[in-house]
Length: 325
Image (cartoon, rainbow, N blue to C red; front, side, top):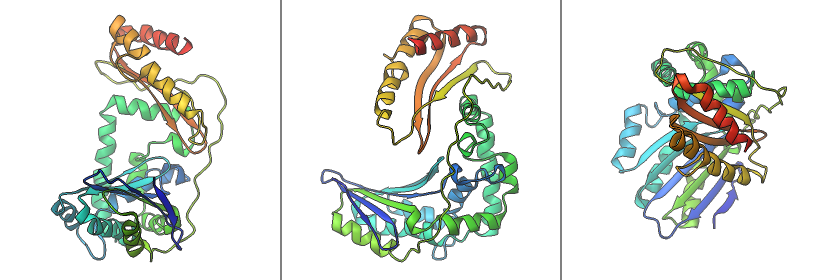
């Protein structure tokens, strides 16, 4: 079973020995995400910072040094930003675990965030946003969040907008890094072929001197007026991409397990009701699925499908019929 320890600086550490494993995985979670960004001007700040933490530290000043170091171990390292956290993760064989943890700790504590790298990465993120614009199945998901949670941080694209990314001040990124990337806003989790006490010693060595601070708190959800809302983006495409969303439940609600199971019955897998009815019986679509997102204090349940423009109304009617059923 995993053991959970809190270091003196407030960092929470979870160690899960897996004697049958051949590798070690390390994840570091930070309280940084779109729900910590107070205004539309700050949209994408957490995601921008996540990119920049791979661009150089005091000991490893070049991005290539960081990527070559993890590649030389035969391991991999990456990161992801979502609404409520940013996670940096690495996987490697056990003998390289100390070096990989040193590398991860360096990124989180000592990134330089140099002006030239900020400007270079600004262009990269604008291209990432352009890729979503070119992917209607992704874009319709972003649009659904905006309709479900209008004017709230969790209803915005996690990567921000062209305007917010283009205008993001370098100093604001550095200030946010100093504020949020602190020990008491972090969790380090290690799992795999590693001894629990050895893993804890490694974390204490690499993260024990990490300072705690006064990080920003997650911006709370406020309930919107109930009732149907619709939003449309017009594009010249071969398919209509449709997403239906409704309120779900928070990650602290035990009913999330029931909702998860409902999603499997309704729209996950080839024997699900939506798949068997809309694709197999009616031939209305290629892709149809349901999904859920559980957040700290709210959630959503969604259904997505890509359908023939001539049969959109029929498809939506069938989806609604299955939901009612």
